[in-house]
Image 1 (tube, rainbow, N blue to C red):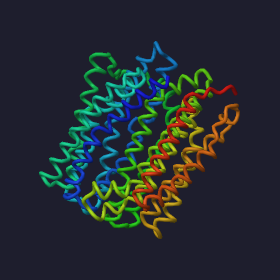
Image 2: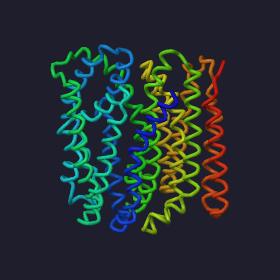
Image 3: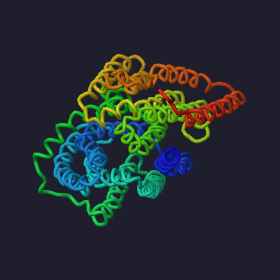
Length: 468
């Protein structure tokens, strides 16, 4: 089990990192041709795109995941029906998304308004939900290499196009949009060919409306759940924009957030690899195995995020050839350490999603969203981007641990100790923030110590078999 989990996690997780590691070598080049304003414009526009993106699939991905496990011999027809419905829905979605984008583009980018709208929506118009259905198909069939190969190829293509459009054509922030459009279309096409032609998962346009309505009753309550991720991780840029925080400051915040996104990607990769295992554990009520796996993942996360965070000052000074952007390492440390909510979040919300008790998720997501909005409104006017950082951290901690106090988990005899892991996260975050300023010699000693402790604890939990 662990060998397969590790293998799949490495495939899902390392495949995006191969292009990102290569991207480190072009970072000193493109940061010479980008300003804080470029990062600010790009970050704000992406935030508004994310504001509506959660409605793109209406939460029906949940039905795709669950039907694969619960209906192993009958799910294909259901998938084809959802595929056909989402193609129709995506036409309406692109209209709504286009209107939102056009009216919210920052003043500094007004001259490119129409082009930005077209470049963002063209991949959706041409292929609809194909890439998402393809990713779920390969993920649930435990074929991670199909996803990894595409991730690596199109990740490298993204780097090449970014380098060409930003540093050779000098397009600034527009280089990102041209790159995203081209790569988005090619990615969709790469999934469309095998899904439609080889595996015969073709859209059924004459789908049963009653079936779609029944599934939407289950999935629509998940939209606030997924929307909370937007509110916590992305809406702060919108609020910064609405509160007239200058694009330069927003750009610094967005740049720091790009480093945290690498660890979010790692969390998503682990979630992709673990999803089939989790569903199996939930189906058999094997919560001891679930706990063992979650604790192992959590320790791994702590070791990686803490080690990287204490060295982030040196990493930024080496890679970022822009003084204003390189000074954001302290912000990036807090955002990176906040991603440690993810392992426990996978366990707590996974059970609710598997049982399709989607309305229960609102107790997690709506409260987390309210916390995020209120804290942003309170803290941003006084503390600017640091207020947004603190808000993100607090909201993500609530997201990660609150569901463990629901009755679904209270009636389980296996304990997950959420308070312990929350305290560990806070202590490690504060420690990493201050250790980042000490000398390299002491950091090296601490790094060796953390690696040894992490390895020993990892071995302990992998071997651990509970008899509770």
